[in-house]
Figure 1 (tube, rainbow, N blue to C red):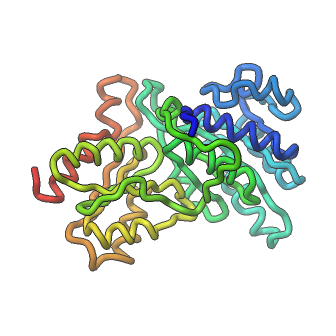
Figure 2 (cartoon, helix red, strand yellow; figure 1 turned 135 degrees about the vertical axis):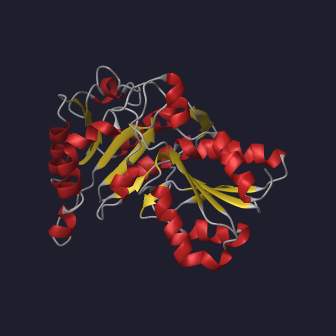
Length: 326
């Protein structure tokens, strides 16, 4: 299979879906002539024209509101928020409109809308550009929320999201756009409601999504050198939350670590841990360990920023401690 960056895999998915279905169009800030802040929409404005790749004003609430209206009218918009922090301006449209309209209309209207937005820190972009808020959206019934961590999943899940008749929050990570991986050509679809075991193991389970999947895989490789076999479950589907692979893994390993780039309090890891306690408590040999970002606004200072977000060492130290090997 071809090896693509995450950026190119997303671009390929958009191009293929725009060719397949003329009702698919893109809108967002600087996505056309400028090819997007992270170059995910590179070349699409030239190929499909300004009617299907719309450069919008800096007006997030209007971008999402326009996309919702277009979706209700039979189109399939893909709206890009330049960074997840900016979507706060449009939360009313996302939560009170996009997420609730189909329910409030008794299923009489569909809202086939995709909102693409990157988050994540580590790039010295300050506290208003560096957070991970996917747990906010995963709290809301009516939204589907995905956060892929591999190029193949990014392509397959974006294609599935565009074809879905419900609003989908498609959460990317600025730190993964250059990550490379094998990506199938053509009709490659990944379900929006299935999580995936990315590495098999017997001693401990590590759950992670988005960029933290890469951290978890690196940590698992490091742990293997010390004789610890870690199973890594990719939590790419956050709403609906597919817990089946996690429960089956915990039944085998009896230990669980959750890793997320967002804050630990009220986070994705908290939800996973709660469900494991409810569904697989008797299989646990140790309390669930949750790893997340420091509970502060993301620092700008490079050294402070480095220690504010989880890394491989955090996972390795935690896993060794749980197994009594420190």
